[in-house]
Image (tube, rainbow, N blue to C red; front, side, top):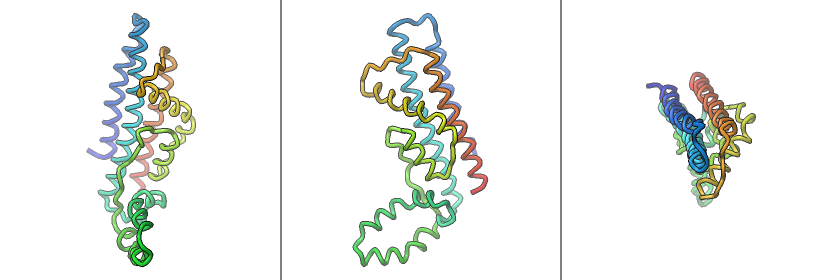
Length: 201
């Protein structure tokens, strides 16, 4: 299975789960509390798939670059920064004499070695700013995020209210579907961006 196949397969099962809940919340016979509970569950699941998909796709992307054993120095600068974040942090904490020695050896030890990436960290709240930062490190451009950043922000904010036990009511199907559509658009754009980047890196 290619990295792209893995990513598409992951998105497929996520979309299938969302489709099941979409059918349930579309049931016109549902009233009151049942409908409210289903919408809250749908919202929480939508957020989980939004965060989970981006984390999974970026992890597969970085794993593929690592498997290709591409020298760190040949990668875009932001990607180098992400790959070397731990080493740079350690370097900053060194005593000056040790730091000088490590700086001298840094190109050989790290820049000319195959890139090794840390875990993709979404900070449990994938706000648009966090997503922009992650995509910047990955050297991926998703213009659709600029179009949907308010929806993604609302998705995170309302999910947090639900997760913290607040009585956040979502009762309109048309309203909910806007957010599901925003997720779908940015998710597919990520798939295409990763495919394009892996073909050129």
